[in-house]
Amino acid sequence: MNELQTLKRRPLLVMSTFCALLTVLISLFAANSVLARGSAAGPVYGGTLHIAYTGGMGTLDPAHSYNDDWWLINGTLFNGLYQFDRNGQPQLDLAAAPPTISSDHLTWTFHIRKGVRFSNGMPVTAEDLRYSITRSLDPHLKPGPSWGQAADEIFQGSVEFANGKARSVSGIQVLDPYTIRFKLIKPVAALPFILAETFNMVVPEPVVSKESEEYFASHPIGTGPYKLVYWHKGVGLEFVRNPYYYHHGKPYIDKILVDVPVDSSLITLRILKGELDGFGNDQDISAADMQQLRHTPADAKYLVNAPVTVVTWLDLSPRDAPMNNAMLRQAVAMAIDRTRLVKLLGGLGAPAGGMYIPLMPQHDAALDQNPVYPYNPTKAAALVKASGYKGQQIVLYYSNSTPDNVSSVPGVLQALQQIGLNVVLRGLTSTSLLALSGNMTGHPISMQEWSIDYPDAYDIYTGVMSCAANSLGGTSAAKYCDQTADNLVTQAEGLSLGPDRNSLLQQAERRILKTATKVPLYYLKDYEIVSPRVGGFYYMPTFGWQFENYWLK
Image 1 (cartoon, one colour):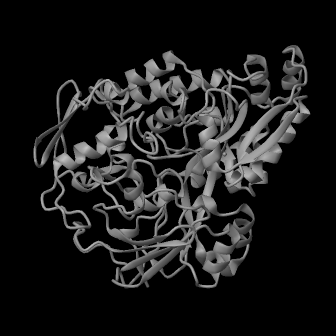
Image 2 (cartoon, rainbow, N blue to C red; image 1 turned 90 degrees about the horizontal axis):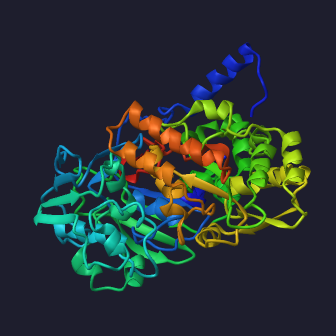
């Protein structure tokens, strides 16, 4: 999902060293590494939680929220048919019971909960769900189509609707006020994950259809545990308990205050002084501050392990000279010393040889040990000479608002210059880099990140590796389409979750990696800095804070 917000090897080891390293990696990346803070007293009600983000909030519309605003609205304002649990797995939420699924896996029928209300008191119906999901496919949505449009082009009639050739989506059907049916173009095993995504969360049709998108973006109405009281843009936001929330007894905390934008080091300082309770987005934490806290025993109580949810890579665009030369792309892939990049991160990461993060069942650990193009600067330099490269300048774009990008990009620059490439850096905000990536040309090399929407390879494949993601306006800057890889993923989605499906997704990944249009760099290891007064805290893999489950001691 969430590219650019958080959009990171391999000397031969003797067996004893390898075993020691393997033990460390298992403990580092275990899917169950989400640690909760217990409290003998148990949950208590009341109080005000105060957090901060380094970025500003652009929109609170679930169809458009993508950066820090995406992290915030997930745990506060909205719900979908499914909700991710503390391990990032989809659980029934607005759905009253598991769906009825046809034998060909193309038809899914859901009954939704009765008695659920929006924060303005209006009842939630199946028509609201139909409207909300269709809205994310709307090509005329302002200020532009939803970033989730491509992911939702799985329903019958969705492509025609998204292309402006149909007035509705035939595969999204309301059978009665509390029953909705989805007819798929092809089987999608990951559908529960997709229906839990932000852009498929429910909004009230009678309200949103009569307001401008701009107004709703700053005056949102949802079914979540909190509702927005005010938003002073460039300063902060305030949320209070939603009196109509349907999860009995939740939330525990009365009010949430959010400061934006705040410098990363200042957020850390204010947490240590007791003025803030935590970072809204753990990826905003600077490597320097993290290192200092890790090595200061008195501050250890502020650190909570966050699972690995981010992969960072280079997009090499074959549509931009000179990266349209396959030999140069391979040279870049072999020039990068991932181990050094991890050192530049202060050790808060691990070398990545693949695009699928360790939390995903399709993660191929063999690629991390033996990447498609292993580190070999001598061979990389020889490829540069053999390619006919004439020394023309190559711009490497990166996000200057993403701390790990800022820390690691000098290492990438040095590695590429050492093999004879005339590379210069150009930093952009994450929002600007995302906009640039949507163009078909003009970004020969760019540093990209993906923070998962859910722990399954289908998420990142459809997000940045598929042909759709590499089309005009798509989130991938590589702009490379491998139809055979897409076909493998289509075949995988016709299978149940399990080894056979995983194998097909891995085959698609390796095809993309062999083109050197994507060069994995590292998986980002995160901690969250949280005040000890936050009870029951754990870091949920996809968007961090599940506010309704915490309390203040």
